Image (cartoon, rainbow, N blue to C red; front, side):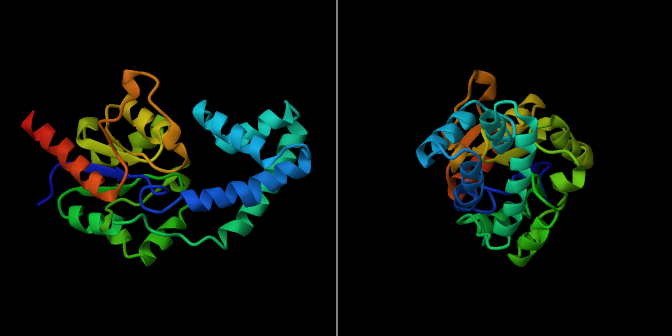
Length: 237
């Protein structure tokens, strides 16, 4: 019999490796598009802009970077966004999706104990990727942002899952690799949180005590222990 806990899993960076694919996206799609529009832009400067934008907690990283470089030129902004979107489609066809080390074993282990749900900003087609890896069967709810027409960090995204499972926020754990998109908005609603701190967004830090996650981990073994710690602490309390 399952415990009365719901665990929400972000997809990119928690279930599927994201860092290599996202680096390719920046290096092979975003930077070349921007370089064509702004010839003086070099790779080092672009890297600094990306880092500064992440550290500023900007919503919509790429849109914010493009808008910054376009200096309020709306027409140029639209042209560049369209160009990036087209090249992104081409890259997506060549990117191999790889599981985070140890995550499948973790899913197998905890799926009989807790109610698991996908909770990612993703296209619905991601379900096919997870099904091919034999992971989809572990989740009782598989709708993602494209299905819901709302995405993180909008708190309505998290409220959807609370409504679906009819569960109190304090009995729901959000696991994500982004402090800004996953942890902070979930905490605002009272969910418990585990920050899987890895990848590009690992450079972020809580800006105040209210943004500190319940647990911070860097691998699947630590993740299992963090889930156990939160649920056992709640039981003890």
